[in-house]
Length: 234
Image (cartoon, rainbow, N blue to C red; front, side, top):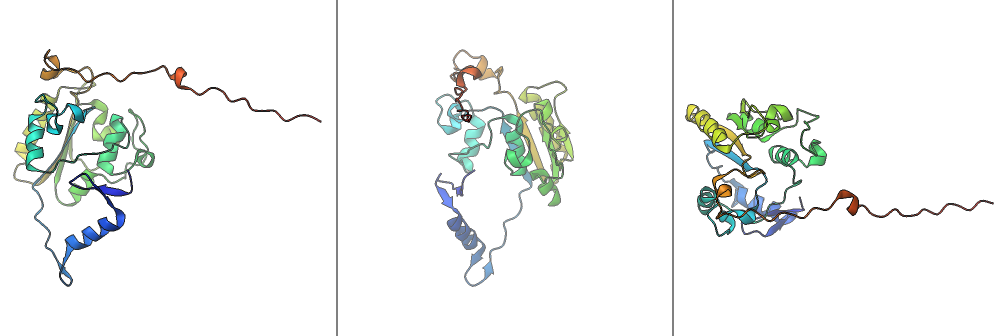
């Protein structure tokens, strides 16, 4: 993930400078600790499967593909560059929820589960702070219990392999309304951008699909065998 932190402006902050910023943020004057801001009532994590930033209007795309994200970006902080530890659904989401690299949490491809279900997650952290926790996912194997991700009190996923995002959002909204008087951490995962693309913009002839990435046969990318000289006898 690199040796620093990416700031709001997109610049990378080195370790020593990051530590200094943390100290300055925590201490004012001579040992006077700044009071922590009040905790948010709702922590909402929304993940979009296989989504390209260059096709989001929030990141400058010409067509209005993400008006809601554009509003959030205008009112909050928009990070210019984020690097995924692995461009595969299950490993990447597991890294988001645990803060660990795939080689550490052990999920390196889809369809696998955590070997160690005691690994802390964002949900277990939030639950420890008194938040109610729930997950609403649009892909069957991404249900937390399937991945052995701990900390979620409530979870919902599709009965089959996947479901459209509208159903996932409706379930999440119903649960959030029922718990609106309580602090909550909610994860909502949407699968619609994944092929086959089924969203309204994808069905419209006015919206173009992202260009396909050329693929070559695996055999064509293998290096040629290197002859190993055999020791001479006698």
